[in-house]
Image (cartoon, rainbow, N blue to C red):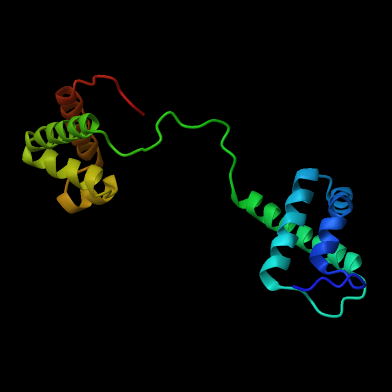
Length: 174
């Protein structure tokens, strides 16, 4: 890079007018920290891309490049802000993966449910599995098994009661 005193380079102009460029961006966008970052980005761009030839007004070009870079950064920040959802507080657990203890408890509870369902009378077991496991509506369960809806409701109550008793949960959930 040659330094011709009659024709200053963009980089030397940026260094000489650094504060002025930062102030120019700060006035337009209101944030001095962001303005400094923009001027630093412009400096990096100049270093990476090299000098432009035949620049008659280097300060005007630097203002234009700085302004365009600031606009691009502002738009990018706004776009990112719409995608990022702010969380008021961090969760207590960083990872929601099951701990060995919780996995053991879940497996034990699952086995208790399987045992409870297996211990139901055959018709009650069929009704319970069709409705609760396979999500078949009560009316369709009644039609498939050739029983009344009241009988389906009775078998469901018996199945739920058996599961609650085996799990040690006597409360009724809606």
